[in-house]
Every structure is written in C-alpha cells, then in structure tokens.
Length: 402
Ligand SMILES: Cc1ncc(COP(=O)(O)O)c(C=O)c1O
Image 1 (spheres, rainbow, N blue to C red):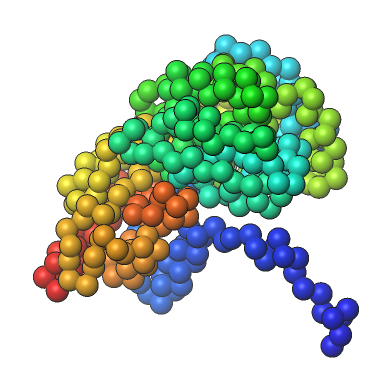
Image 2 (cartoon, rainbow, N blue to C red):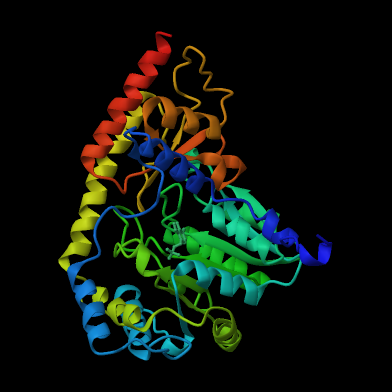
C-alpha cells in the first residue's frame, strides 16, 4: 500500500496525552468484568441522578417537538437565565449576548483557547491543575507554563510566583476555584490580586467555575466580580449531576463574541435544543435535590479527610469545594515491597487497584507537582467510602507484615 493510500494520524493528534484517570477507569472495568469488586474513587462524576424537574423539562421539550437547531449562541431563554443567575448570585450584570452555550464546559474551553492563542503563546496554569488544561493549550499551539501551588500554602496561587512566570509571550492565566484536583478555593483577595495583575499586563483571565455550587466553606467568588472582562467557564455537569447531558457555556469579553460564535457555527454547531430547555430548570429556582447533593458531598468530605489522615496520608489543606481530596502518600509508613518515598503515583494507583480493589487517580495526571499524591473523588456513597478506607487499611497492614 502506498503512503497516499495509508495516511498517518497528524502529529498533534498523536502527541496529545491520554487522560490517565480514564485509563484507570478502563482497567477497573476490565477487572470488574472478571468478577472483581472495585470501589470507584477515580472519576469526577456525581453518583447522583439528575434532578427530576430537569428530566421532566427535557421530556416536555421533546414532546413539544423542540428538537431542531437553535441560535448558534444558544437559546436566548437559557442565556437570560444564566445572566439572571450571575446577577442574583454574584451581583454582576452581564449581557446574555456575551454567553455562548456549548455541549459541556470542555468545548467552551477549547473554543476560547482557540480564539485567544497564536502559536507559541504562553498560558500560565497552576501545578497541579485539571489535566485537560495543559493538553488543550498544547493542542491549540500554546505553551504551558506551570506555577506550583503547595498544600502547606493552602494551594493558593501566589501572585508573585505568577508574575515571575510571565514572559512577553504570555497571553492568559488559567484559574479554577474550587479546584480540581485539590478542592481548594481561591480567596477573594487572591483572585482580586490576580485580576489586577492580568489587567496590568493585558492578559486574558480564564476562570473555570464548573465546581461553583459545591463550596462547603470559604469564598465562592466569580472572577467576574473582580475582573469584568474575564472569560468565565461553567456548566451543568457537576453541581446539577448532568455530566451526560453535555451542557456548558463561556461568558466572554465583547471582542471575542463574534469569533467564538463563528467557531461554534463551524466546528461544533451546538448543544441539543431540549437539553438547553432542561438547563433552564435547575436555576429557576434550584430544586431541593441540588442542596441535598451538596450537603451529602460535605458529609463525605468530613468523613474521608480525617480517615485518610488516620491511615497516614498527608492532607494539610482541608478541601473546601468540588468533590476531591488530593492526598500525599510519601508520609505513609514504609512497608514490605512498598517504598512511599520512591513509588510513582501511577504505580501506587496500580497497586491500590489490583491489590486493594480501590480505583484512584494518579497525581501526575495533574502536573509534575502531583507526583507523590493521589486524588480521591468522594462522588461516591458514604458506604463506598467506608469500604475504600477498610480496604486501604487492610492493604497497608498486609503490606507491613509482608
Ligand atoms: C475543572 C474541570 N473543568 C472542566 C471539566 C469538564 O466538564 P464538562 O463535563 O462540562 O465538559 C471538568 C470535568 O471533570 C473539570 O474537572
């Protein structure tokens, strides 16, 4: 067969790294298919069902025949509901025209990065941070500049470290509060200082607020409160348990409205009409199920963190939001064949899955700073979390006795 008849995948499609946590999930599913029982704490997906009113709204919209294309920015009724939410929740006024509704937050991130970056532009992200940020930035031709954040500093992004990382090629700063994988929230003060820095240097401030609505203590501040021209990304997957519905949005500065809209028209078209109808429901007003899911995550957080500390994991900063605990394992007691000082996060995640039957995400998935850590997701029932703790405790003591 000639080269012509056998095209190779492009180098950037070959270079994009896998989302490691998905590899763990697939390996766990392979084990389950052989009859093993696995406790799933790897995936960041609510274990709750979508609230009933949302499902009903979608069913009614389908019955009314709302199954056609909509405006390329998204249904105006949904954009107005989103603008009303920002007015009521954060006291900021945004024109619904600045909102582009997408099929989940991920396409919104991709559209915005594509609209902002020229090849070779730098984007500053925290290390650790959500793995897809770095992968998407590189895929869009940008360069990733990582600024470390530390457990002992509450995982706060330090303004001076960010300033020191800026170059003439820096175009944007990514923030995510509450954060995946640390569960930390940026204080209003830090956010304001970062907003000031980006304004001073003419950078885009990209704020991923997908875990808003899941804050248990501390501030829940939208970047728009301190930076009216920030790009804000948000969606319905997490707080409303709607991962599979694929509904998200970006609120963009005026100058980016048209470029984003044109990309949406060409690249993705848009989220399903009846899904957008359903998306209006959770916020008018939020159904009680949303508050009870949040309360349940909080209960799990208050169970899991002290239990992991008791087992020997190091967690200095109590996660304040989202549904993750980023736990350091270098502090675990040394055990037969297991040296916590040298084992990699991929290896320990592998052992936990194969020997303890607990699936977790390796810290390296979130950046170099994540080595020495594993991420536990508490989007799993309290019973499952109790079972995971029992299994890890048994595994550690079996390892200790050889
Ligand atoms: C920080 C962060 N942003 C974005 C996403 C993607 O969310 P969506 O389901 O809306 O595409 C995730 C999913 O885990 C996430 O953790």
